[in-house]
Length: 283
Length: 240
Figure 1 (tube, rainbow over the protein chains, first blue to last red):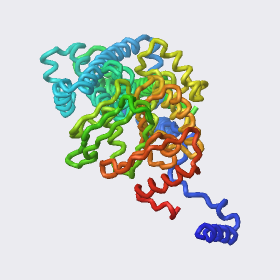
Figure 2: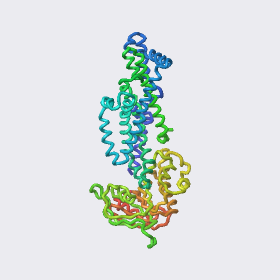
Figure 3: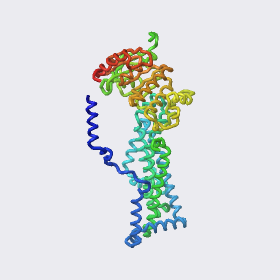
Figure 4: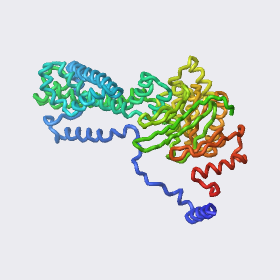
């Protein structure tokens, strides 16, 4: 009885407003996806405004060099060989610190995420370290390690360690309880569980931490290269400040931006390969 | 059923409570080897808890009494629980201790009808295919006891019927003892040798269903049992 009456109701309603249901679309609540490259619109506008102001004399070279001047200066520095040694010195510091930080961060996260003793010993320490700004450690580390490379690499290492540990540890702790139960009912050994379930499950969290770490190693480096160095991009920029060469400062900023973007793209590429199972439906 | 058949599952006054709330209340039960038992009950009646107790899960519960299960137990979960980062064959052979593991897995995947899906990621499978993979993973271990927690509950009606038939065909060969938790009275009647109804953590009904397979759901014996079961589950049959 109810079936028939409700069926009739639906039909009359549809008859009364023919075609309406097809015309009416639900409101779009989220922005549509951007076509590739359009994301660069904002930076492009800034560059154009910047360049135009410089050419028109609104922006004096002693305040800020034009982007074209900076690109030219950068090119000349590459050609006369005065840039690459500094770049190499910076990269060596940043990436040795990064490597150490990632390796130690992952090892600590594994010990802490997979064993109770590990968590008891490690987690509190890392949380305390997290609360201390890296820069606050500089005076002490200078006393311990001097003002040479060891100090710089060590400080980058401690800065990178934190996000790697935090994210990897959280990923290990947040493992799907359903997968743990499955592993138990399948009778996996602890080693098999770690290898086949825990580690692959924590991989997405690890990649998040890796992207943070890659950005962080360069950020930490800029500050550290202000402390007694004769090499590095930070040193170049500092010296340029003394001589008022804003074009070299802009070159330095551009290099940092490029390195940051390239490193991030590289990590994303590795991530996409390692986590290819996630794209399976989209492709 | 042969009176001399050994009991595969024995429960004696098994109680389980979580933080003081009793979920299983002194359950005693004998299940002969090879019997297919369906466990019915309303939500919260304790049927899943009972199954999980037999699977050795839920360590945080306070347990009294005792139970015994065979050495080789396999669990079929409602969500197929395939690891997304392993291919189908990788999932099916995970933790498998058989010398002929991979070859047997290929045969089993063919048997469950997804022989062409061995090397794909689980995310590309449909719900029914995932459950087929999950069934292959369980049966490949040739368990003496198969614990199934509403394995077809999330599937559409047509897929569910196909999966029920597949399950019956496959367990015909291995003859494991099976405990199937379900909320579907028809599923229980079509598949099992014995139907238990759980309420508030106790077994309130225990029926044996001795009709041969394949069964027809309109069979008179099933029909009268169906009304009785629905009634004990709180549904008056004549209202449907």
